[in-house]
Amino acid sequence: MARDPVCGKEIDEKAVQQGSGTTRFGAVEVAAEKGTRMFYNGQWFYFCGVECRSKFLAAPQTYLEKPTA
Image (tube, rainbow, N blue to C red; front, side):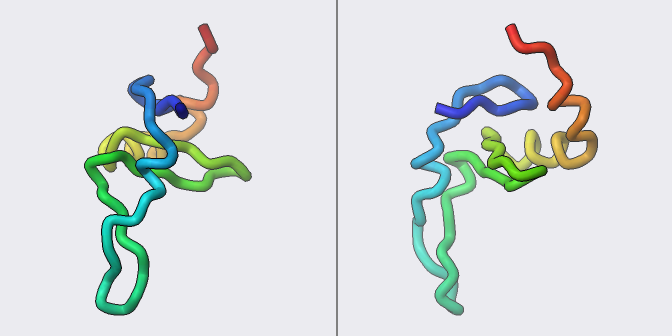
């Protein structure tokens, strides 16, 4: 399980990547309520939702510099 760097919630990586359908152009759709991910600085980051991902995008260093417990 991955951990959301913004809120700390555990995220199931496989559920985030699993397709829920396809667009009319054939692109894979994913269920946003299962979480989301993004590739940043050579690494995948997983988020509980779009709100946490947006906060991360606005100030990634804020969340990357958090001390680990």
